[in-house]
Every structure is written in C-alpha cells, then in structure tokens.
Amino acid sequence: MDKVWLASYPPGVPAEIDPHRFASIGDLFERSVARFGARPAFTNMGARLSYDELSRRSAAFGAYLQKVLKLDKGARVALMMPNVLQYPVCLFGTLRAGYTVVNCNPLYTTRELEHQLRDSGAETIVIVENFAQTLQHALPDTGIRHVIVTGLGDLLGFPRRQLVNFVVRHVKKMVPAWELPGHRRLPEVLDEGAGLSLDSRDVGHDDVAFLQYTGGTTGAAKGAMLTHGNIVANLEQAHAWIKPFLSEGTEVVITALPLYHIFSLTANCLTFFKIGAENVLITNPRDIPGFVKELGKHRFTAITGVNTLFNALLNDPDFAALDFSELHISLGGGMAVQRAVAERWRRLTGHTLVEAYGLTETSPAACINPLDLKEFNHSIGLPISSTEISIRDDDGNELDIGQPGELCIRGPQVMKGYWNRPDDTQRAIMADGFLRTGDIATVDKAGFVRIVDRKKDMILVSGFNVYPNEVEDVIASHPDVLEVAAVGVPDERTGEAVKVFVVRKDASLSRDALIKHCRESLTAYKVPHLVEFRDELPKTNVGKILRRRLREPAPAGDT
Image (cartoon, rainbow, N blue to C red; front, side):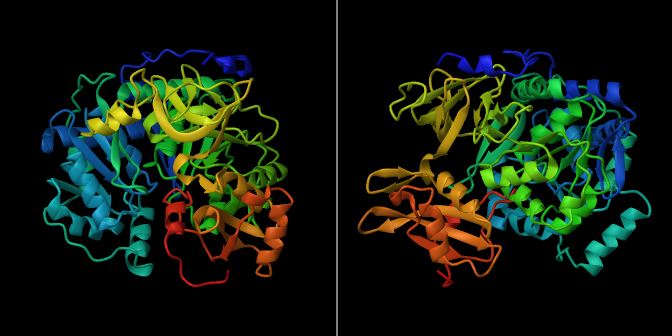
C-alpha cells in the first residue's frame, strides 16, 4: 500500500526513525540517567525516586540476580505487582543485568499464574505480598526456584513504609495468609545487592527483553517475544511522534494503567523515561475518588488511559474542579474511545482525547492520531514512523483504499514471534513480514485508519455485518448510559441478533427508551434485539470490557 499517510504527518514528525540509535533498553536507561539524574523519575504515595536513585537501586537488584542467584544470561524473571516504586526498580534491574522480564497480572488466578510461569520457564519471581497466596498454590507445578516478596510500602521511606504496610496488612486486611519457604524480602535483597557490582552484559537487539503474555481471554495465553530491538524501535517511533509537542525534562505523566500491561509499559514507563519525565504511579485506579484526589496534588501535563477510565473520571463530581492548565496530552488506547466520552473530555478539560492503537505483538504502538488534533475523529490515527500497513482480505490479497479488511502491520516494532509456538508465529506473521492483527479496518485517502471491529466480535445479522463498536458508540451517547457492551447471540430467524449490556446512570432508563434512541442512528438490523441492565460489566485488569464473558449465560436480571 502506498504510504498516503505521510502527507498527513504533523510538522516535525519524520517518515523514518533510526532503530539502532540505542544498543539496548539498558543503553537507553543509562543515557537518560546521565541527562536527568536529579529529576524525579517515579512518584508513588507521596514518595519519589530520582533518576539517580533508580539507577542505584536497579543496579543493586541486577547485581543480586547476577552474583547471589547466579542466573544465566537470558533467564526469565517474573514481576507480579501493581504500580508501585518496586516495579521500575526490578524492571530496569532485570533488563540491565541481561535477563528477560515476564510481566504477570497480580489478579491472576492460580491456574493462570501457573500456566504463565511454567510456559515462560521463569525461575525467579518478585511478588507483592498481597498476591503471595496465589503463588503459594501455583508454585509446585512451576520451575520457580527463587521467590522475592515485597510489601506495598517497602520503598516509601520512613515512616510511610511502616504505616502503609501496617494499614494494608492489619487494618484493611488485604494480605491473605501465605507461606513460601525460603523466600527473601526485597529490602534485604536491595541491601545485599548494594554491596555488589553490576556486571555489563553483551545485550543486543536480538535478545528478548520481555515475554509479554497475550490472548488469555480467548484461549491459553501466549508469550510474545519482544526484543530489545523491538522496544527500542517503538520508543524511537513514539518519541518522534510526541517530540514536537513536549519539552524534555519537564513533563509529568499520570500512570494509572498498570505498568505490567504493554500500553503503559512502553508509553508511560519507557517513553516518558526516555524524555526525562516524572511518572506519577497510581496504585489503585479503581478507587476513582482516591485517584481524583491524587490528581489534585500534581500539575500533570499528560495522562493515558482506556475509555472506561476516562469515562469513570468524567463521572466523578470532583474531577471537574481539577486544574487542567498544564495538560497537553490525553491519550486513549487499549480499546475503542467512544465519541461521547471524547466529546465530554474536551468540553471539561479543553483538550482533545487522542486515540492510539497497538498490540502486544507490536510493542505496542502502530498508529497514533496527531497530537494537535482539534477534535475527536473516530480514527486510530496514522501509521507511525517506519511503519507500514496493509488492508487484506481473507486470502491475503491487498484491498483498495476505503475497503474494509484485516489490518496488517510491518515494522521494526513487530515481535520476534511467540515463545515456543512456531505454528502460532507462522499464522500470525506472513511470509512478507506483515503481522495479522485480527482487526477489521479501513484506510481513507489521507491515511487515517479506522477500526471497524475485531473479526471474532463481528455480529452477522441476516447476512449483514454488525460491528459492536458502532452500536456501543451510539448507546454511549445517551445521557443516562454509564457503560455499554454489545455482543451477538444466537437467533433462529436472523442467525445472530444484537444484545447489549448497559450500566445506567439513571435507574429510570428503560429498554424502550434505549431502543428508540438506537433507531434514530442505526439501521434496523443493527438495532439491539435484547437489552440487559447490569450494575457493572466484566473487565480486564486495564479496564477493557470482556465481551467473551458477556456471551456466557447471564444471571437473571432486568431485561
């Protein structure tokens, strides 16, 4: 496909980046520390780590892995924790020491954790004690040999450390009883490692930096092998895109999405680290009142999130009172941004909510809207620098501009493959290097890409394609709707019918009123046949609505 999108690039954004500017993530880390040493790098619960302090502590952790645990180069180290200061310390320590990070969702069940640890071959894990009981149950069937446990407050300093850990353990009772014989405590590990030297390792672009697991909602999770070269390239791509709009060494970004998720990991933790920003870590973004209170303490310049997070903030009565005068980047990804949410965000904050798109398999950024976008355009943006896209039919043939087909991506950020799954890798990455995304998309003459929907989520009503995103977008514009999800359900007459699950703002909202609203904007076959009202919708750890769960038999309720 011709690169028609280049003509729509904002001024100052290059067509290509140099993917070899940094030898590894460790190389990038050390250069940023040299430039921004005294600046705060990460802030959490009132405590800060400067770039210099993060360098010292991560070196201590890496040295412990090398000298005490004596791990071989490339060994997998699992990290299982929410957004706390311990995460960047262990993340950068692992990478600088020449090992591979295996990010684990703290909300995993025993079965899910056991699968990921066994599949990855991880032999070391760092885990927050709140989730240690899960590890205790999973451990016997894994290859884990070294367990390092930390409390939520361990890096907050005196007396905040003691206070937070006491409240978490004894007041809120958030730490179920656990027993892990032979484990070490992270503060002890860091103290021991501080007396050791971190050896440099010959780490290059082909070495795997992350085994980032994906696909767990549709089957057994697969580990995407993201190399140092993949991540470094994507950081250069993201930086090239934001550089005309940001000032290095001055930005403050709000990081509410968990750092173990690829979006937050690359966009917030790594890209903003590269430019000397301060990352404000939100440990529990589901506590919206607490989140809003924390926002009020910072003159933040950037915020990233998913649609459900932005929607929840907009519906908190205290959010409107915040100071948005320094804010100049609001970036949405991970799921489709709904027009109603985007328009409310702009009215309240004065800034456009810019949508971006990526996959775990693309490290993740592939398309981003121009950051100087004047208003929401319902597009995922333009392919970023050094990225090619192709719209293809089921037989792999490229389609013309404007025709819907599977979005395929090629660029230096595309994964090496799936860990120990050559067949899955071959199915995902075509012979010409393009990655099949599984998303149905169109491209217009200006190069803007629009996602129609996921292949697997498409609803077929009497032979007509219905895309859940379109239905959800219409329903979300109703003033009495808080959240919505659309799925297809079996129907004797039409094959499938559209069913929607709705969380109401106003309990008086009826099915008939909602259907009437839909008929004003949707063709008849797209109008929901069934409406089910619920108190909440099932979501992933980052707030993505789980349509798969909604297709399962639901409890009796108001329909």
